View 1 (cartoon, helix red, strand yellow):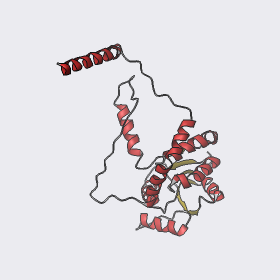
View 2 (view 1 turned 180 degrees about the horizontal axis):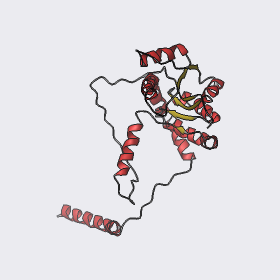
View 3 (view 1 turned 30 degrees about the vertical axis):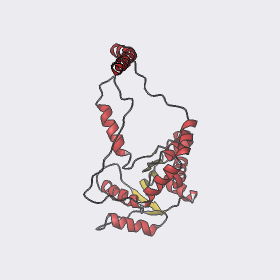
View 4 (view 1 turned 135 degrees about the vertical axis):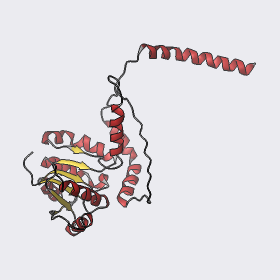
Amino acid sequence: MAVREFDLIIFGASGFTGKYVLREALKFLSAPGPLRSLALAGRSPSKLAAALQWAAPSSPPPLPLIPADVSDPDSLLALCRRTRLVLNCVGPFRLYGEPVVAACVEAGADYLDISGEPEFMERMEAKYHEQAEKAGSLVVSACGFDSVPAEMGLMFHSQQWVPPAVPNRVEAYLSLESGRRIVGNLGTYESAVLGVANVRQLQELRKSRPKRARPMFLPSYDVLLVDSLRRPLKCLLNVLLISIMII
């Protein structure tokens, strides 16, 4: 990738989630590490300035504020050409995410978002994978709270298996505890409603794509023996139960 003006641009930094992302990003910006330059982007520079003041009330750093809008592809392309990575916080992604993905892929910039919308993520993979691969652009979704704990849990669980054994399926459960009232926001609610309303489109998308086979495991002799005995034993048990009922 050519040298870019910024390491990271947070798009939608003035939104409900974007403000918290900004506050955390400032911690990395002020500490030694790979993040050396940061800019904020969105429809309203004045709202971006207010978000920056909220994230760092004592001494907000002089970050560039870049106007950009998902309805203006040229503004998105210009934005993506200035940075190595775009962190997209503008949702619902089903409605507003694709123009940002398209601009990143065209500009050869990497893309991250906080989406938890399966149909959007799988549709972007199906539509932009080959183009992103040619451009050297990484497109990574599901970097938000509803996805990261599951990923970390899966990684930890996988590390507990002794090779050559590997997990074939993992079910995750999450419980929330808070001393304060748990609140949401309109964008998250809208994403959930749209996801449920358009679940059939996700099903159709998955049916149209090649199936990915799960790992196949050859059972041991003991497992084969147990499986071969299972059906006769079940039939015998049924006969015994019927006999007892008759008696």
